[in-house]
Image 1 (cartoon, rainbow, N blue to C red):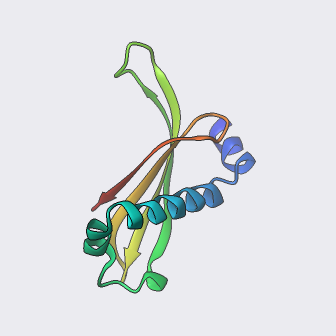
Image 2 (spheres, helix red, strand yellow; image 1 turned 30 degrees about the horizontal axis):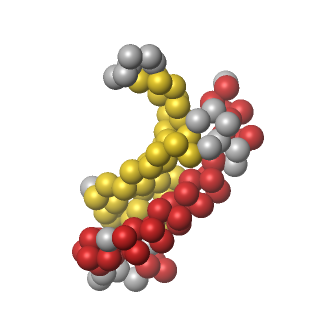
Image 3 (tube, rainbow, N blue to C red; image 1 turned 90 degrees about the vertical axis):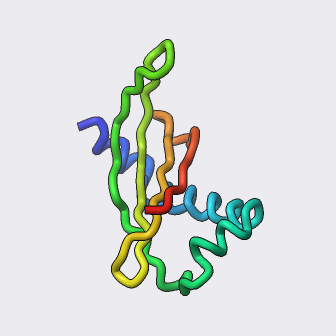
Length: 103
């Protein structure tokens, strides 16, 4: 399957962790109060990043169809999920957008 090849070719698990780390560094700088609300009482070293899902998406929201790969990790602390990070990549492995959600 083409998605399986893409996962291997771009080392997606490593790629999503790198994207997440960049996002979180910016989050700390740009929204320190929000960051403290989400992470303040957690030992960051004990947060598990769990590879959650990869999807090939065709979105018809815009005039032309928009195709991309969505990769998600779930953040868990004390065996409980508390947030999710999703990165949107093009077919060449370049990040186009990303999202951080509290769950």
